[in-house]
Image (cartoon, rainbow, N blue to C red; front, side):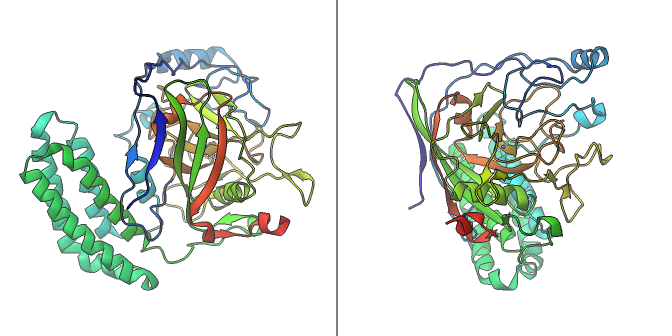
Length: 445
């Protein structure tokens, strides 16, 4: 039986209004800005049992208002609440990006889809199966059973792509994973037949769960195409903890003073393919139990943040050096085999580059850092919650400025219920620990 991640709540949840209107602080404002591997061998969905409360979103500034404010003020930060935070958690001072980027096509917001597309593979045949299965989500936005006609077209397209491209898909599997990949393809084919029967029975309610299962099979096949770690990390970072692949962690949070919610487990997938230094640093800290017992330190409807330890230090103090351990800014963009280190995409002149791990999903996980020092991230992490007109999915001005290294893939909606003072009881690695190279926690004992 598949594991169940649940959030415990009362029978009558109270209506809350968690989201607040973002403001545009000056450059002195302190600000922070943080994926389920389906298991490299997992092929069954993990059901979620959570009740989501109603929330009212606050009004955000229009692009025109923000542009005027930027023109009239010096060093403004866009779309961010003006709240105090530690000096390790500044937001950068971006210029207003090209508006053609801001209004680009429909974004992918599902964390599972983002993770699938972020895999370092180049197999067109499996992508042609994946895309129409992903499109079922859009088809289901049509009211009633009329949606099933579109779903059936999506399914026919995916089935045709699988039949025509199966040989190319199998040839793209890593030799050491081929048997497992072929097994998943068999389950995918059988699952498509089951979805076809669901559609023929006009069972609209059964579509989404079966779609999720099929996409997990697709994701598993795609992961089986990755043969080892695809590149060498730059020499100056090779001795740091590195996540050479993916890992999954469960974060259990104790919620205080909330009659509707007592505790919740968030599943997070960490992507070391696109952020090996950043994800490796986090997994190493998790294995040191660095975050266990730590409070949520910011929760304002825009982000949830933690990771600032007690005392004067604003990050993790490495016992071997007695100094704060910091990591470089690490950003991977589409079309590049290696991440960029130490510079924002704006500084590199890559204004329209698309990051492999964008701030698209509710619960995108990234590292906080000093506003004026790209390589100052240490232990403070945040999860982005709110979109505004200058932080829309697929063209978020945070992309390329902060290092994304994972996504919350289960119970992410409950991040909005967290508040300052809620306690992280534990974060545990549930899969992928074998992908961590150079773990300093073992050296420290």
